[in-house]
Length: 230
Image (cartoon, rainbow, N blue to C red; front, top):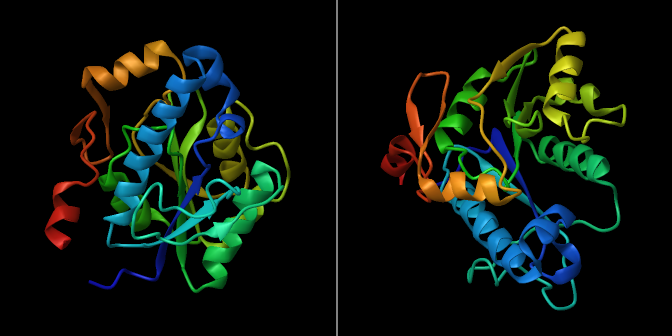
């Protein structure tokens, strides 16, 4: 089945190497456990994106000599846009621009460190996004796990400073100041310490989407609607 090219999902991937793992993960879990945890999280996020048929994916990858492609993640080697040496904010801006340059009308960026995101959130975000409405998903610490825009709304990313710890709250304020409506998906959480890891592993009930559908933490990469499309 051909994917919907009007929509695009952006996913940033780092190789599972010592120097590429986030500092907070290494400090909280130790290097080897942090690497295993990151691999699990990125694999889960990638499966969601791969099996979602209402959008094409753009993967931004920071390749290395040891891992020059993504065969460590998917034997089919999905292909990627190479990311080298730019700041996270430049990476976000440039990848959104690429999505629109390739013909997408709507694009969403997701954070692989937030495992409780469901593909139903993607459906809701793409349905809500237009030139007057952006989509935003916040973690419980004020950071964001989902950002959805059209090309005419990229101006909210022009000024630096939107990737700090309260990045979701910063972006919400910017969107409102730009006189845009903000469609918010359910509140989620990042895996970044032992408490959040236990929360993920516990399988406890977590965020409620705008459709008031109860969502459980699970490694299931798709929702019922997505599975039917397959």
